[in-house]
Amino acid sequence: MSRQSKLFGRAANCERLMNLSSVNKEIFKQLRDMWIALANESTSMSAKDLAKEINSIEAIQSGLETKPTLH
Image (tube, rainbow, N blue to C red):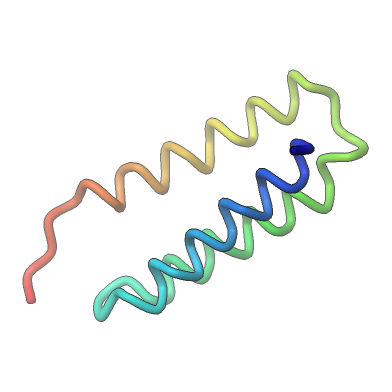
């Protein structure tokens, strides 16, 4: 599996989370869009720059996924 397809997979995961969430739909939509943009740009990025961008998006997403929500 190429690194680009892995990034598109992460976008698909955000799409699923967006559809399941009643509170964070817009945030998951933005994360999905960030993964898609990164996937599209990844073919022209160095491995170092790509890793940096992945880490940044993962940090945002992991903070969101572990944050308790009130329903």
